[in-house]
Image (cartoon, protein in one colour):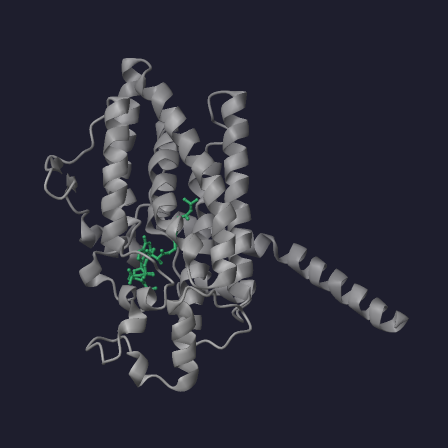
Length: 330
Ligand code: 3HC
C-alpha cells in the first residue's frame, strides 16, 4: 500500500520520493513483506519505535504476572492452582522472549528495566486494575488475554523478524490462557447465585479497562500512522477494539452475563456492534500513574529488581570467570 505512495503524503509519513536510497530500499522491503532482521539497515525511528513497543510489551508480560500470581495460593482447587501457576510461568517466558527480541535492537534488558522503574517506559494500562475476587481471574483470562490475542495475532506478521517470531509462540500460549479464563467464567456463571453475581461484577469492572488495552482512539494515537507505514502495527487501535467487541459480546451472552454498556446494539449495516467508548480521561490518568494499582505494581517490580541484584551479580561473575578460563585455555 505504502509502496504506491510516490507523492508526499501530506502527513508525518514520508513518501518513497522523499526518502534517501537506503531508506527507500528499506521501505520497499517492508512493503514487499520481507522481514527486517537485526543486522539490516533500518531508520533510527523504526529502531526506537520497536524498542518502545517491544519493551513495553515485555514489561506488560512481567507486570501482568502480579495480579494473577496474587491468586495462586487462593485458587479454589489444586487443579486450578496448577493451571494458574502454569499460566503465570508462561507470562514470564513471554517477557523473556520479548526482552530478547528488543535486545537485538541494541538495548539491554537492564536498561529497559531501569527505564520502566524510572517511569520512562510504560506497561499495559490493564495491569493497574486489581484482581479482587476469583472471578476476576476468569475475567482476566477471558477478556485481557482475549484482547491480547486480538492485538497480537496480527503482530505475528509484523515487519521485524525477531518480534514476529516471538509472537508466534506467544500467541499459541495466549489462546490457552483465554480458554482457561473462559472456563472459570463458565463455572462461575453456571454456579450459585452468589457465584454468578461475582462473575457479573468481574465483567463490569474489567470490560472498559479491556477496551482500553488497544490504546487511544485512532484520532489520538500518535504512533499509529508511522507504525502502520513500517508495518510494525498491522491494524489500527479502533479496528482491533471493534473486532474484540464483536467477538466477545456473543461469548458474554453465552455465559448469561450482561456487558455493562446500555448503548450496545448490533448494527446490521456495518455488520458489527455499536458500543460505548471507554472513559479516555481515566485511561490517560492511569498512564500518568494514577490508576488503582500503579503504585503497588511499580513497588513490586522495584523490590524484585533490588532483591534479585545478587543473582545478577553472581551470574555476571560466573560468566566472566568462564570467559577468562576459556581465553586462558586458548
Ligand atoms: N497501556 C499503556 N500505554 C498505552 C496503551 C495501553 N493500553 N495504549 C497506548 N499506550 C500509550 C503508547 O505507548 C503511547 O505512549 P508513548 O508515546 O509514551 O509510548 C501512547 O499511549 C499513544 O498510543 P499509540 O496508539 O500512539 O501507541 P502505539 O502505536 O504504541 O499503540 C499498542 C499502542 C496498541 C498497545 C501497541 O503498542 C501494541 O500493539 N503493543 C504490543 C502489544 C502489547 O504491548 N500488549 C500488552 C498487552 S498485555 C500482554 O500482552 C500480557 C498478556 O499476558 C495479557
